[in-house]
Image (cartoon, one colour):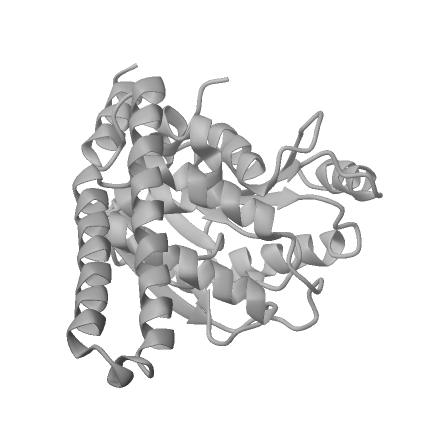
Length: 316
């Protein structure tokens, strides 16, 4: 189905998976937030093969209000794929992506829209939590992955990357045209395509569904999907720096020699291990990037592709 951007001002996209307890309140809070924003809107719920009462609740919400649309996945494909489905079917010239667990507050949507209205068409506005709310290991893994990714990306990611964001149809068209095969990295792709990324600190609602739905395996899938966005030049430079650091550490230990080097050994071993791991990751990234480029064409790093896609749709 072809996208139909621009038919209404705002599309609010909500991926849903087993969130029956939050859906009625979520819909009401979105309605109130959009009333405060003062813009016509639609709400797209994408049911990612929920096994609880979510499908029945969503059908009832759609029957009650014509602004609510429900799309359904026949099998569970993950949050990112559900968001991509919503983006492909959205009719709004501005898109807002929001989780279904109510940890991100719908009341912050007008705040994102105000920042977006004051920016250009290639600006991404992303809500970031003021404080850590996920398990420490989850934040640590995500932060480490983002730091490593930023060494290889032309445009750095916010270290607290989230799916609660607002952007205009230019960036949405780019995702539809080039991001469908790598939907797990959709937020990273948006950051690379945007001229500017504005981060807006927000409070997390403690009354939302607890816990994180992203385990270590899901984080690895996202990390791997980002490889198509990495710069080969940066990957080579990172690998060279890591090897050089390891060589300097080994040379320093040999130069010190004797007993004075004993105290250096634990630190040298740790530094060499980190440098070797970094070099290995950079090397694996180069291999994966070459494979991805061969399969899917050159990586998308510049916004004009989105502009051309939107222009061609408008001409049709």
